[in-house]
Length: 87
Image (tube, rainbow, N blue to C red; front, side, top):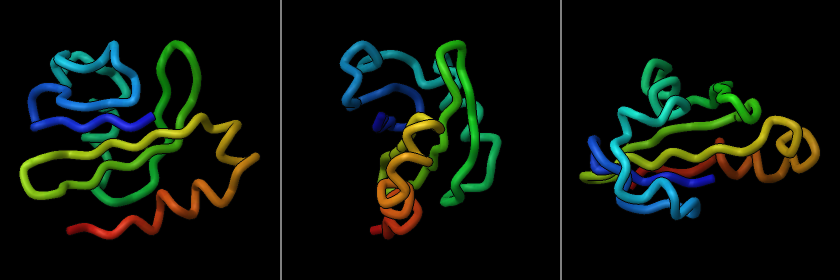
């Protein structure tokens, strides 16, 4: 899952239900905000556990999450998430 916020609201996501919501109301985003930026972190919600990361680009925050079980099945995706460069 990818979520882009302006710091307050979700402005883009591949989960269309999140677009327009306050980022403060999305539990996994709040968990990532409490962790160091640009580091892979483990977060969870009621559905599952994720490995994710937040990076800031200009005026937007980009949150990337992958299901923890899938991450271990697809290690190359995890490698991609950890090597994204800031612009």
